[in-house]
Amino acid sequence: MDGYFSLEDKIQATGGNPAVMLRNNPGVRHPFPYPPEWTSWHTEQYAWKNGCVLFDQGEHMSDIYFSGPDVRRLFSDTALNDMSTFTRNDAKQFVACAPDGRFIGDAVLFGMEDDSWSLVGAPIAANWVHYQAIAGGYDVEVTLDHASPYNPAPRKLWRYQLNGPLTHDVIEAVAGRQIETPKFFGVVEFEIDGTPVRALNHTMSGVPGDRLTGLELYGPREHADRVMMALMQAGEPLGLQRGGALAYVSSGHESGWWAAPIPAIFSQPELKAYREWLPGFATEASLVVDGSFESLNVEDYYLDPWELGYGRLINWNHDFIGKQALEERRDAPHKKKVWLVWNDDDFIRLMRDGLFGGDDSRTRIVSPSSLYTPSQHYDTVLRGDRFVGFSNFGGYTVNMGRVVSIATIEEADAVDGAEVEIVWGEPDGGRGRRFMEPHHVQTRVRATVATRSPAKVPVQA
Figure 1 (tube, rainbow, N blue to C red):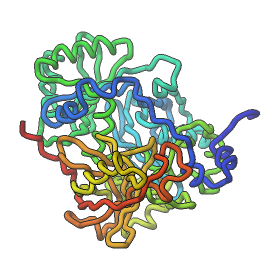
Figure 2 (cartoon, rainbow, N blue to C red):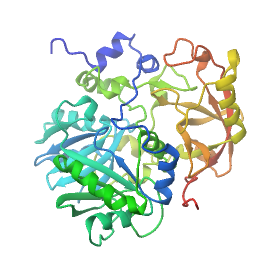
Figure 3 (cartoon, rainbow, N blue to C red):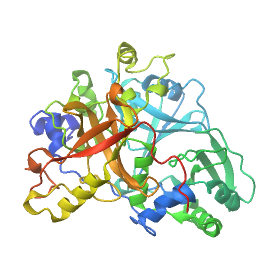
Figure 4 (tube, helix red, strand yellow):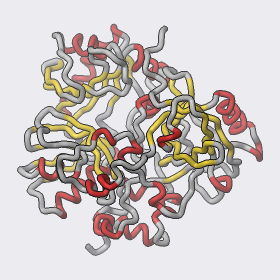
């Protein structure tokens, strides 16, 4: 269409190399339309392991609805997951791959009704499914309900997340009755103050036990304030805390979720039509790559499902986009997702040199998250002088008492206690990069591999 500026146009306008585009995008932090902290980020972190915290998820995530007779066939064709029995009040961690088997995006899929499903999260996975619905001629209607900062219309649903070992107590206090624990990723329905509520059994904290330790509640938007007031009135006597943006983002350090890796859509000739369909202001076009790993080949940043911990979700009993490519690599070695526990002394050195290093400074680390730019972070991980993978999302929580980052490294090196080094800081001192100090010096940070989250047990008061 005349005047339309697509992702493909943006790639070509920046020299035709998507890796260069991603390294030089200006980048804008995704807005969270609520306070960074309600009390303090460390108090709010402590609550999801030792009490209960409430996060408002109804503003910063997109909800994209797919309705119609072909909705199951559409999702079966685009998801590596099994969709054969998915129905109302089911939920899944939906994962989509490109035809070459490399990762595009993930989101939580909700069965709103038998023939009406929604994808909730960053819109990357939903954009892919939306395009496939159009290109494949599926009998499906798509309704967009984007994150509030980009959406002039009122949102359709409110969405609140409760997390922590007191979640069950809080929800029964506000509901005024016993609530049975649904299966993991199952949905239960009840009422709060006379308003309809659905709740997904889903936790960001990983506290073990048979009782509910995490619930993602949602319902019609017009009841949002009423439900929030009821939750706080019932929950505050039990110690319920509200959580802000800083604590919310830092929950990934414990859960191990790698948020929005670079989707495998930028280079393949067969995906040119998709890049031409995506607007030049889409999330995919606005991503930024930062970190010590630098390549002119964008495919070096692509990952496959195994490398992100999603290999267990692959269902081989149905046809889906990328299946053939994944089958060809099914028995090959794969990188493995791990936690890297940073050396305390090296972290302290980075903090000292970042603040007081003068002309020989190190890149500063911001607590509770170590990301120094609004970006997708790819730091080189070395064992000795051997490249073994990438370190990504990093930071600190009081429940771990350590700084960690999420990484994907060679399977042979993914051993508890293995010693590695993270190359920290931009190549060439960040010269020419936006959001960088005028100059900094790359350095190495010692780290230890952990194959499970370092924060699996509640902290004792």
